[in-house]
Image 1 (tube, protein in one colour):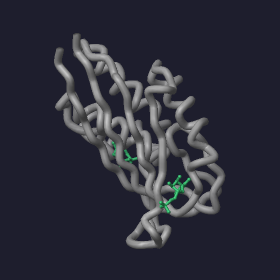
Image 2: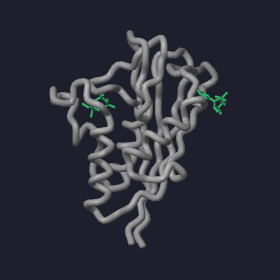
Image 3: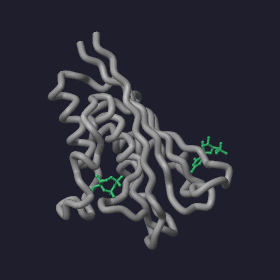
Image 4: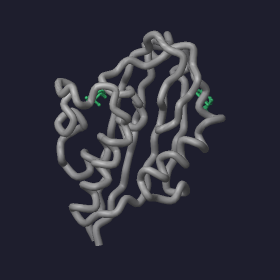
Length: 159
Ligand SMILES: Nc1ccn([C@@H]2O[C@H](COP(=O)(O)O)[C@@H](O)[C@H]2O)c(=O)n1
Ligand SMILES: C[C@@]1(CO)OP(=O)(O)OP(=O)(O)OC[C@H]1O
């Protein structure tokens, strides 16, 4: 059996707005996240983790920020593409784990909805999908609430 792991990391800066998209959920917030797409930093890290496990580059290779067709795009498009690559290569996704790093918004109350949203997009049981959060104890750019960072890990299996 071939077992592969992949990791992903992403950051988006806060800007004007009244909500952020995180792991497929629209979360009300006093700021938005700036990006070429909808700036769903959690979904971008997860998508990159899948590409990493497959050694197929990163999200910017598949969806160049210079390409206007991805302006404002829903990030599920990127995750669905990565899931398609898993299937095309004969793998299945065993589990994934996403950590969001921010002081606010608080993730705990919306983490179950995020797991369900990712489960629907990924065609996977929510029991195989983890979404959790930490602050950075007010240190650094996340601590100053200048943006949100995300880290993701995936495990792929090939029979
Ligand atoms: N944006 C966040 C950050 C943290 N949490 C939850 O609070 C717990 C304590 O955070 P520390 O950074 O002080 O360890 C953390 O374990 C999360 O459960 C959150 O919900 N949203
Ligand atoms: C997702 C893409 C799509 O153009 O743009 P952004 O929304 O800026 O997100 P980023 O995490 O910087 O990844 C690069 C791009 O692939």
